[in-house]
Length: 336
Ligand SMILES: Nc1ncnc2c1ncn2[C@@H]1O[C@H](COP(=O)(O)OP(=O)(O)OP(=O)(O)O)[C@@H](O)[C@H]1O
Image (tube, rainbow, N blue to C red):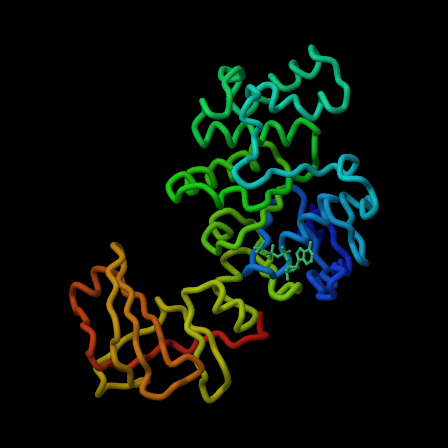
């Protein structure tokens, strides 16, 4: 494939729209191509339409208008089971009274596949996710990580082309969540499937995604790699939602400046005058909260300092400082 050829799209959404009976538009004519074998995260605040988008792809929700293509096949009106997608739910949603093997074999049982065949296929899949030796355990006898692998095997038994994950990690404790997201990323690469993962966590999306899709009010605000979205937020919404940025009203319009790109100088020096309002120690870095003398888009600004720099020149609440940044670190919107 030469550089000019875009990678084939596993999923393509064309003017996809969902209007619920009560009137409001949950998903507003979105267009999106998701590359095959990629990890895509749909990200946005509560109510932005990300779950509705995922449910429409899964076939758990009707579309109001628009089309959904899976590998160039129009699946918009197909029943969920005929689409080539599978869904993995929050906290994995395993049946507690069934063994790992029977959990994985469950959908084949519903299809009337005989016991020997379905157990063989389920065992094969459990082997594939390194869970073959625990096939007889019930979910309650497995660790969180092992349960996630069983849930993955259960989703894969229908041989989907695309795995849809609806906030799979959000009910886990923070430690397990970080472990499990590394596993998800590993299995996506290992299995060579397309994953579409809904989350409201910026950190989770940045850690996992090849492509992030940031949504707001039923529309897509930005599509790009985590690096591109973080470094060149397309809108004020994206800059604020991603965090780690200050939105400042300059003479040349609103700009976003990362909080680790702002430099501090003594107040009588150059820059925007401000007062340190709080100091938060975070380990490898220190986060300073500052109040600008003149409100400029946000009157509160945050600045991240490396711990070593802070130790060299510590700041305290009440200290007067001037803020500066290199011109190339100020990102204006609409230029992404
Ligand atoms: N069954 C429904 N009937 C009516 N409105 C709905 C229904 N489901 C969702 N909505 C509305 O559609 C909009 C988008 O909801 P959706 O669940 O897709 O958002 P979300 O971004 O996934 O939010 P969350 O993170 O809270 O799940 C919201 O305004 C929501 O209230």
